[in-house]
Every structure is written in structure tokens, then in C-alpha cells.
Image 1: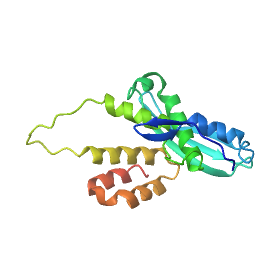
Image 2: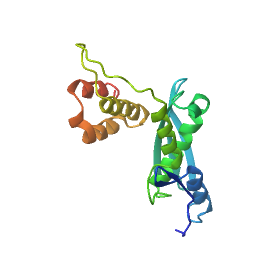
Image 3: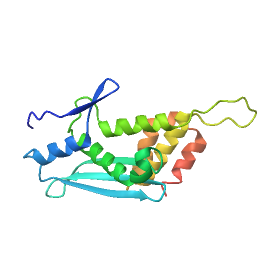
Length: 185
């Protein structure tokens, strides 16, 4: 591949490549410019979407995929453009999986800035003493949310479930594992 110099964006002291830079590289690089960028919304409703992007050779051989999940209203941009934002993120991740623009990070500048905006827009929650059933930690909820969305958005749900179990089985309760298994059917 060429010695293409990616433009980067500094976010909190780290350099990230924007998705448009990754696309420009793909379209300018002779060995790659005929590759296809295909997107498919595996989940799309009025509240959220999951997009899968596939990068394929001219012969149709899949060489990289990327997924993204967005919720309407989770950030200012997502109030009006959650579908477009999701597609852009999926494309950026698929191109990163192909090895484009990943010197510093697989995440794109777009993803990182969106994630920071979402974190900063969420209201802080107070912890109060209560005799009620303890709530799952934010990390557990996050793992479950991500796991559910990953399984729902996968064409091979059993493989997705197995992948989650190999990474997070020790972090999940038996009830959570059983709940995730229901999405495999």
C-alpha cells in the first residue's frame, strides 16, 4: 500500500482518523478502489438502529465487516440523524478492520467524539441507600446491552453468543446467560 498520510483529529491528546479519510484512501488506492462498501441495517426502528458494513472485493469476497449501534436522541446529532450516524460508524469500523487508518486506534474520530458527547450528555445519577434489590452495575448493564444488540444484529446468532461467552462468561450471572441464550433461537 502507499504511504498515504491520513489527516487526524486530536481528541483528548490522542490522534484519530476520520471516516471520510478512510473512505478517500480506499477509493484512491489502486489495489482497493474497486472494492464495494455495502451497508445493511440489521435493526432499524424509531428508537435505535444497528448497521452492518461489509467490504468486498470485485468478485464478492467479503474481506472486512464492521458494526455500529445508535440510539435516537442519545446525542444532539442522533436526534435527527441517528441512522446516518450509525451507517458512518459501521463503515469506519469495517475500513478499520481492513487495516485502513488504524495507526493509533480502530475507533474513528467520529466515533470517539460521539461517545464523549453521549457520556457528557447523560445526567449523573445519585446513589442512595435502599433496601430494594441491588441494581446491576453500569458495566454489567453495558455488557448486557452490547451483548443483546450484538446477537440481534448477527446473522449467525449462535456464533455471536459463543463469542460473548468466551469474552464475558465470568462477568455474567446465570440469569443473564439464560437471557442472552433466548436471543439465539
